[in-house]
Amino acid sequence: MKRTLRRVLPAVAAAVLFAALAACGESASTAGQGGGGGADPDTLVFAAVPSEQTTTLQQNYQPVLDMLSKVTGKKVEFRQATNYAAVIEAQLSGQVQIAAYGPLSYVIAKSKDAGITAVGAQITAKGAAPGYKSYAITKAGSPIKSLKDFAGKNICFVDPDSTSGYLYPSAELLENGIDPATGVHPIFAGGHDASVLEVASGRCDAGFAEDSMVDTTLIQSGQLKPGQITTLLKSEEIPGSPVAISTTLSPELQKTLTDAFQNKANVDYLQANGFCPPGAKGACTIGDGGGWGFAPVDDSFYNTIRQVCDVTKNKSCTQA
Image (cartoon, rainbow, N blue to C red; front, side):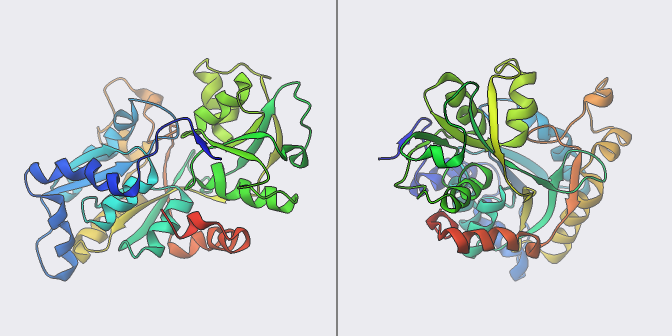
């Protein structure tokens, strides 16, 4: 039986998460009229899901939010969602116009005809390729030495809609003859940080998480000591997490947003144009994990995710 450490909202509750937006000026639910000849909304809603429990995600995105507001002439509201299912439902209902997705959740949203297009994927440094890896991990000193040893054990995953925290791990387990649903005792931790920390504490025998959470984020925050976790396997490169905009916005506004993410939503531009906090110097970073900016991408960039979905037959690929 699957266990959940952090509560995951069902899809029905996801719409409720954003329902309060209807009372804030022009309802975001009217946003879907732009592409059909109606007016674009006065307020654009930007939604994102943190990879760890945090209260600073909006602060990390604030330079980008301020820039978007200036270039579009519109108010830009930020909404931190509990999970990707909530973001997908909110975009389907027209209550979110801009969303930061994981690669898998983006593919799911596209499969549900959410009316979105990927315009950029986050990168950690100027000129870097948009991508990252999934790690299979154990507590240092564990008797588990390979993925084959995961069979029958308590295994921490992140979320059913997580690319590096479930989809790619599922493929790796299947390659080792283990059904990720029945061959292990799956535990959905709810975040990459929680997955790593549950393994470190011994509550999970092993688990999966994104590379940066293991290598840097938790160590820099002091929640994890160097050498406390052993990485057994690193996945192939995963396409970077995209930002997607609603195709129901007017073509002009879509073009403005696309240009903003591809050419202005980066540390260099934000610092040069006064969007970073005073005195931030090199500390002005963007989004979850402290990125540099965004690299241009399109929908075809995520075809490798669709290929992994085909291999794993993962229900999460079509069901949020």
